Length: 363
Image 1 (cartoon, rainbow, N blue to C red):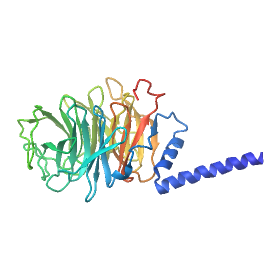
Image 2: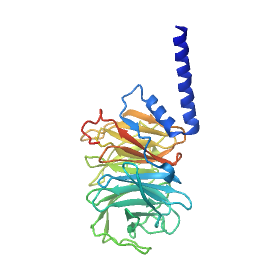
Image 3: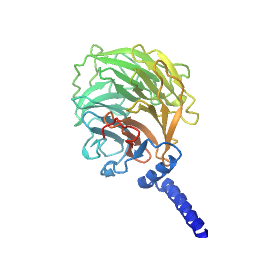
């Protein structure tokens, strides 16, 4: 019996050592171990893919955002730093394809449109000649379109101006939702409509005329009331046409009707410690995934009901290692995998859904 207790005590000491070492060293392998342990008392829905990407040495800066083009099987990563490639392109399997740095100053948010014509949108918060814009590129980094007034921050709508645009979401119709206000002059959500022709913006500067770009509705100003924001940081849409905004400074998520911009309500009782920095919905539609930057935590919230937004309920969470700092994330529309851009760890990590919980997915 003494030998049994001795073995049990030794195993417990080893576990404590591994957990402490993981938090101190930031080892991704040990983070995977801690991730598994932290979910022992709950149903495990996702597992960290420690083999993604195949070669992590391509991450040479602070990784701020990630976007998945599920139709073409591409994952875009944008990073910040001096004398580095700002945009990296991988396959969903983790193979590195290419990198580019054309006309990208200081990337903040990304969106990859899953269309036959590969395209990725980047919000740029830089102070240089490419800053304060939302730009569309092809997968090789060629600039296709610019929204906003390059290099000029502002609040205007004609011509359209941004100040630190944080993130965007593009519908299949081409309509664009932009959260404009990562600590800048603006705290607003803008819906734009395009005629689909696109405008070639080479060389810069190039400003889209309002004949090609229409502001359908605008919501928000600095404040704490309904439809007001304090650092709107991320935007997405659910399968029922509701637009969701991570209102980070106000520690809540707000919902809007996509056609009219009508305010539908807010979730604010899940974020007493820290506001959300990113929001996306899982492929099965059962959860909203939220990142909390300073807490290094991912929350899985119960998806809202049909016909209303319900209340905020945390179903599960993933506690990452200290100072990993998850900033923005995206979900694959093909596999359901979650990709998380981590500023502190300077990497993107991939979490894959377990087959037993998602039997209808094709892996």
